[in-house]
Length: 102
Image (cartoon, rainbow, N blue to C red; front, top):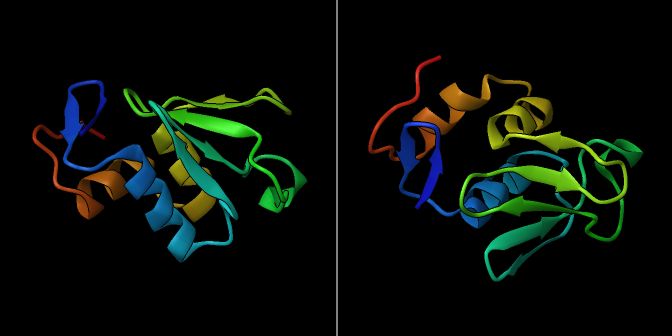
């Protein structure tokens, strides 16, 4: 389970990232490590770097890149990668206990 504000999604951050990876050119490499997911950064090198340089926290979906210092919420990352409303996409793609308003 993963939470953003008042919304609780019945999915892990890793699974959400894998879903984005399967439908876009972003997140060439991902790796689950304890309570976060390591990913390649979609904000620099046109999202095509070869080694993970960013992490997404499992608890709240906070994205942070160690290289370019980008900090974003998971819905903002989704919007950047898929060019859709990130919150709406999460609500449509994953079962949610309590929906976040748009």
